[in-house]
Image 1 (cartoon, rainbow, N blue to C red):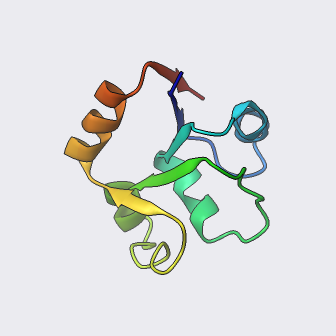
Image 2: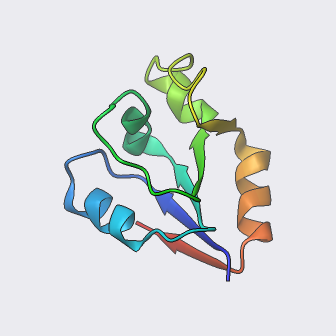
Image 3: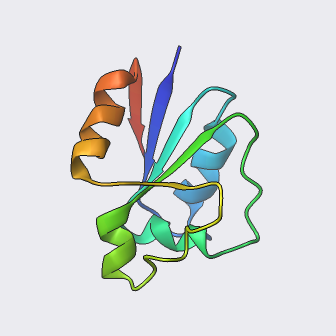
Length: 94
């Protein structure tokens, strides 16, 4: 079953760590709000087989628009956010 995990907590927050421990192969992760700063942190070990997405508007709002370039992250806009939710069998917000 595909699951979309929407995470809005920054690294170091308890729910950030809880989300990471709940990710499994084949899941999709979308970072929004303060969670987008995790893109520039190289201390997080992202689980293998998880599709990594970050909300472009939130990157731009924090001056991090170019931070995801060349990394494993796919930047998505709001229509892309909606597409991720409709394509997932289950959605969990952290």
